Amino acid sequence: MLNHVVLMKFSDPEDAPTARDLLEGLKGRIGQIRELTVGLDTTGSAVSYDLCLVTVHESADDLRGYQDHPAHLEVADWIRPRLAARAVVDHES
Image (cartoon, rainbow, N blue to C red; front, side, top):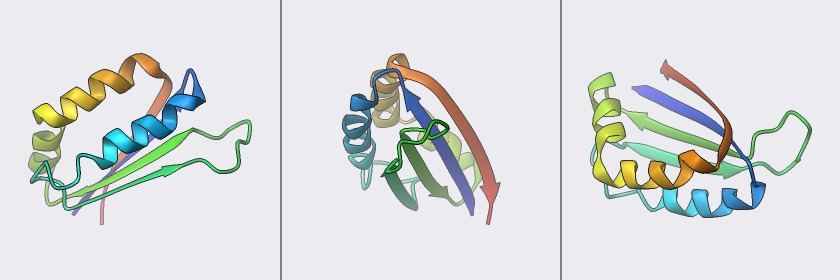
């Protein structure tokens, strides 16, 4: 399994709940997603990011299929211009 972990810091942290809702809306719409979890930061520390997305995929090909899916691209088009920073780690489990 391939775990795709994305941390997002928004220019306006108030955008994070909307991003969470949009990302959670991808569940069941994209066949290449085995699991999808979205969490919002609760501590607000100086080093915190606002949102953490974790998706699980069978393979790197499934991850690419998810990333290229029109539903994902639509959500990404809303999120990208609102980001101040993003970090990604893809790891096997």
